[in-house]
Length: 263
Image (tube, rainbow, N blue to C red; front, side, top):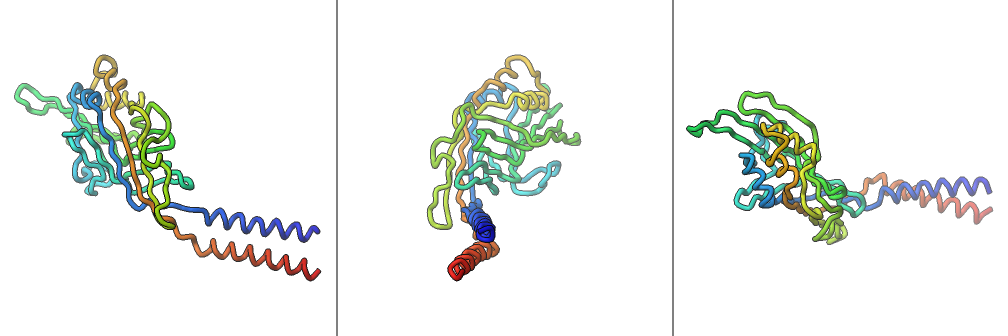
């Protein structure tokens, strides 16, 4: 009985591990998203004398210099379009989408009476990550004060967070199987987008603005807009070792069954 029990435990372990490794694993094939600034958000930018820029290529001062920008900004609609190249998936749930080498530059320029730039302040938001699981948009935060100045890096920060949890619209962030090997997911963050308070303070100081007063309050309290994301996925092909492990478990189970039958 002891031998049989130990053998069954071994088989169970083999099969459990094999089944876990054989569970669906989705890999992002392509993805896109939008961050649409609201009228209030655009008003906050214009009130501070700032504008949004998304250069075609990453500037020389930043990591990834010369790489095509995975973000594009349309001023007329206040829309940042993102091209995603990575995702975090838990089973059939899409947790986040990332846009490597994406960059949005918020720039504030000071002009004299002859419209000559006398000072310039830049905030760079790079490598956007739209996290559907906690309703937050992250980015690497950098700043400088114009040509020849030293670039400052503040790490990866929470930029905007939606006022309501969850994902709405589309597939609500769940990967829907289209074929046995392909699927898609989509959705939007729920509620208004608000600046993270600490990040808002950092934006204000980096742009040479006061952290109190009307403009600061507008930046902190404005509904900055909405964001949505979509992705297509392929199911990862299991490693040969996965099949080998399952076969080994089944073979062990068969051997035990034959041994018990002949006993």
